[in-house]
Length: 252
Picture: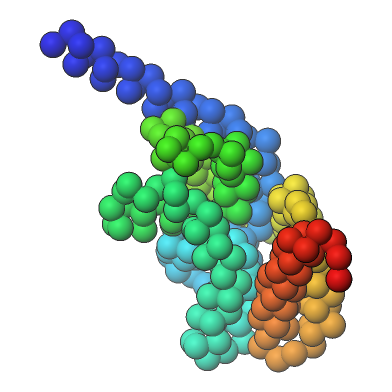
């Protein structure tokens, strides 16, 4: 009985420490997350969504990039398929993220993995792998790692949703001349830059940025779709070329 009680106490300690470490790891980025959530909340109301619709969207769609990408389309009365396709393309990167995290969560049921995927954001993925990517195969999916992820997710989710709802409630009081959209861009850049590591990621980011500017005039904001697809293609191509170059010892 004592052994069982002791093992439960140890499990609780590991969970608590993992959760706390996750919150501490994501804490430096939460200012940017809060700004991003605030601006997104304001933007949803400014394009004509009701308070209830805006709150529903922010709770269901835990992705500021998808929200801000789809809002101009909603305002322009774009077809539903264009809005949905935009959301899918903008979040295509999460297919790669999910594959990277699969070894750590494969012991969970499909239902639990679906639930955990809702909370995954770019910075959580980057922080998690920066800490655990080198863990031996047999040491992946530990209780400490899972609760570390939960701590990061809880911290970012709470800040993001709280500030988004604050933005929704205060949207009517925010003058348009404040230019909060540009603040959101700065916050997104601040969160994104630390994640650009390696030549493929840099090439993909630069390509997407250039294409986004060049294709900005396309109707229904389709330039964003083109930029995302081009960025992903450029990054994947660069990865393949660099791997082939490395495997041949740098010879042509």
